[in-house]
Length: 92
Image (tube, rainbow, N blue to C red; front, side, top):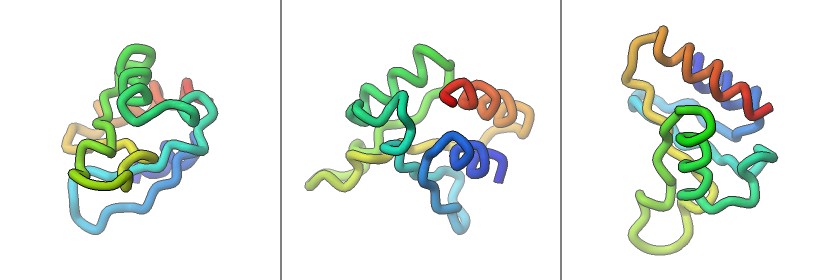
């Protein structure tokens, strides 16, 4: 819930997962990332904020289904996720 709510606050479009330890977030409504491809958006978050998502297009062998998404994993301690959430808020 912490990560879903933070990403939504920033402008990501997120559907909460039903049981997985990761989520896919559409980043095209986030001004700082909107014009980037998924790899560049991921690298931006890594380099500027220290938060490491995976480009969504890595999960599709064919088509462009993942081109608008970043994958965030949340199999971490709550305090680690809280720190990531605080860092992500710098995108606002």
